[in-house]
Amino acid sequence: MITQKFNRDSSVEYVEMNFMVPTNAILREYKQVKHELVIHRPEDGHKDWYAITLFGFGADKTNSHWEYRKKREKPFVTEIGERCMGTLQWVRSLPFARIDDVRFLVIKPKGYIAKHIDVPERNWLEPLNICLSYPTGNKFVLNNKEVHYRPGMPLVLNIHYEHYVENNSDEERVHLLVHGKKKQEFWDHVETFRQP
Image (tube, rainbow, N blue to C red; front, top):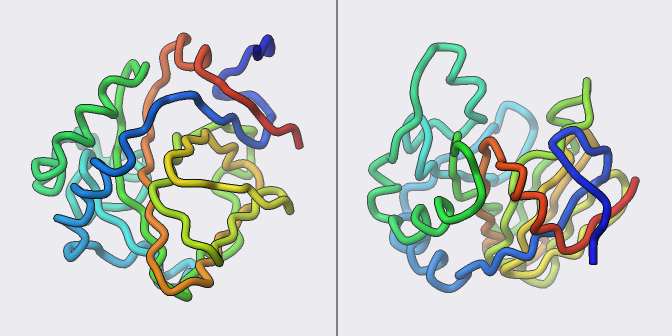
């Protein structure tokens, strides 16, 4: 039983949630839209990292929601999201007060996400990062320690810490990423956590 209290500003590296993820159903919807993936952040030195947005500011607008909010845009269900309504229905069942964006993030075979820190100026336990497929040969390193992802595993990552990902397999690595304002009861679903 977890007695420690968490919130967005907690300094742990990650918390694993006990949400039951309908992994196979989400992957079935992903396979219907995967041909519309767009390259994600190539300017930052990543290789073969792709994304598509289900809920946000456009299917091909795959950066974080705060970059688009500056223009006073409002998020919506994209044309991709219209074809993944089961996935969005499940996300809406989670204890969020507000959903900001929902995206598939995919690393193609032999691709990688280069080392980076998303929010260097603060500890920030955000976003909900859900593993849908994690072929043998993948490696996710956060704060110089490997995270042992498995399909169906939902983590809230502290993106203040440096992290990188390698897909040294012949298959795609597929994750679902959810940004949003969490209700206080969201943190009642922490299964385990890792200290820095």
